[in-house]
Amino acid sequence: MSSSPSTHPDEAVEPQQLGASASDQEHDPDELQNQRGSRGRQQHREEGERLQKVLSRAGVGSRREVEDWIRAGRITVNGEPAVLGVRVGPTDHVRLDGRLIRQRETGGAARVFLIHRSPGENLQQPVETSDHSDASDEAVEEAAENTREGGEQSSSTPLLDRMPRRAGRRFIPVSPMPRVDGGLELVTSDGDLASKLQRSMRRLSSEFSVRIHGELSPQGIETVARGELDNGQKVNVERCEAAGGEGTNRWYSLVARGASGKDVRQLFERQGALVSRVLRTQLGSLALDRLLSRGQFRELTAEELEALLAAAEGGTG
Image 1 (cartoon, helix red, strand yellow):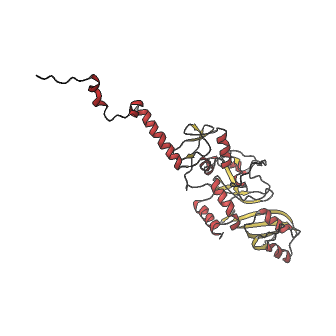
Image 2 (tube, helix red, strand yellow):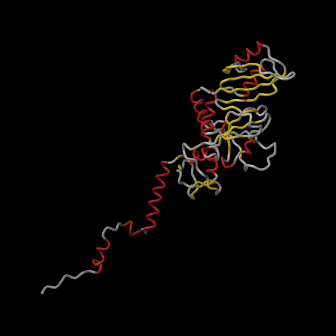
Image 3 (tube, rainbow, N blue to C red):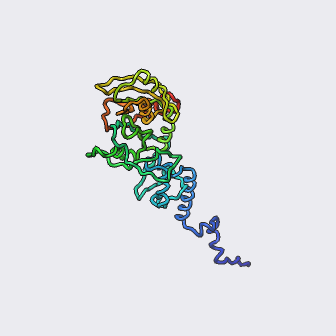
């Protein structure tokens, strides 16, 4: 009678180990899941947007400011210190100084405000000149820190400090008027949109009300309409005409494409006029409303912003 073959103790457990990899033997299931999640986050970040662009669009700071914050270790992404070049997506948790930043999705509604500024009123805190300019962001990336909305505000408080904080931590003026002048001002918390609008200003028509001491002759008005500046460049003046006045003060209405407040003042001063006030009353498809008092602001509707962008792109504003 033949005896059955003996079974080695190790062989008895071998069937239970079939299909198990060396990796499974070395790591527990929780650790494997964490590794897979880490690989997924890495792939997600490679497909996301640069952190500087995301925070600029959210109105947190300019791209250069964000770079400085990254270097200073003030920004974290999912609990880890951010590094230059990191990409983030909508599901990533981004914090600045421990405060969670709400991202605005690409194509989401940008917040743009129209302000009625009085002549001489500060739009933002004066910014000291530094030697680290950013040509890509241009001057539009200069912005002020915003305070809470509501409450008593001093008349000396810059207008941008009175904007609603929920709309962004900073606001960027688009082609602002000189401080001595005023009228319609346009600001946004979206850095990319501000740059886009700033570049398109030369294609938009603006209307200005100019007050001078005295009166221009018909020949003087014709000369203003030629749009010749001190540097030899020319402003595309579409219309210049008298608009009444009282006493020795006279008002003139001027419509020009791509003109700044500084340009308009210079056109009149070249005729020997003493200019006391320049007010921008229209910018592209936007116009000051009589119901909007000085020092007040309102948010543009989606339709107004769409019309402004269309005019800027097509040069029909």
